[in-house]
Image (cartoon, rainbow over all chains, first blue to last red; front, side, top):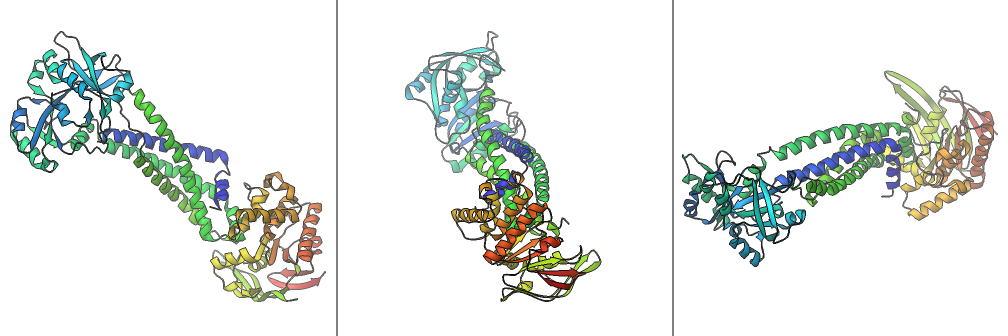
Length: 388
Length: 228
């Protein structure tokens, strides 16, 4: 620590160069923070509440619906406790940029999704109101909705029988997601599938569902139950694919592409460029200080100390730029999430991202500092002082 | 007086590509404790090489160098660095101060290698700056000081850890006459009042007059000895 002022002074020896290098590091880690938040948004978010649930979709495409008649046969499979179903609605509130994650759900849906915590009186109101809807508290806060409001949602897909694509709903409940619920649970909008069927211009909606949600009697029966359910539709025109909720969420996100791979590829390119850029800056900075490093060694600083100081300089540079960049991402991510109108439910920069970010900063810092540090360590005092 | 530096049959050969250049050969020299010695000679005579060997910046090809009883020619690079930190202060022609540090911080540098506390380091550096007459310039950076003042800071840095020996390579080579005389006067004071042993390389006969002895080197051999 007693060398810190020396390292700090060396780092800011050329202020403009250090400033621009810091800006590039800052930009790289700002991007890292935002992309990692995007990746987290498209993953299950580490939810553990759905381990005793399976999701059954069409084997071929998530957008292909399944027969409603399958529910009773699925219910008869040993290990199945409850079978519910849902349909994508694709709602928009007032303006196309205000996208709402909205679903038509079966009456028993809340019995399967325990993490949707609704006060008893609101649950009762939901059950008894045909056009009733419940929303997550974050979604209600976003649009300033309160219980009793009439909410018109325009569907991007389904018109009503009168041809109008705007569906009126009565907001009867605002739920709070239980601890451990998946990312974005508090951003959702649920209403009755029965209302969806009755008022829908598409007659097929009454005989089909989007997907099934299956509650198991025990999580360890997941494999056997999934196979049994898929066997019910084997060799039919509606073969199913039953998977854990986590796998379902992942495959849902992959409809857009392999987000994890895309994020990794972008960050790989960004960090590779950063290593080249910062490495070059560090090498140049140390080359300019050859004489000063030789003086330090003349005074009695060991080769190891000089090596350590140059390595620490690289790490400090990365830490400074990286921490500011990641901190800035922490500020910008919620703003972007809010500005996306619900399309991007970006979680805040979490501890995991910070830890990974700090490890990357230190690793890149050590990497870019390594070559100049070794060169400084091997410096011959007499040659360096003579300018050779 | 006791012998501080004892050099026996010293030789140094540099390899420049495939060429071998013998810079010093068969040098024998004894320097007493408290002496102020000037080394003179034409360019390429080997005086800076001899100074570097005495200061432990380089190792000889042959012969021995004993300083205060330590055979420094036998020390490895790590041990030699520790030895330099404890026993030698260096003064260069171009001052070689850290441009981004203040005078105070520059003087403190050798003390970072000791176990002194931050407060003690600061105090010792202030004393050293006071000794060279620059106490009021402690917070100035080298670029804010004249050449003579920078060299004074370099001398303060050289003496702050109270070394046995000061090695000075052309300490006035970059200074005007008045500043040069001030620096030489300061070195003489350090020698006479504080008992520092000084070995100084110089081209300037006037500078050499400040020393107690002058040795001349030519083509790597000591050729003449004069007593001031």
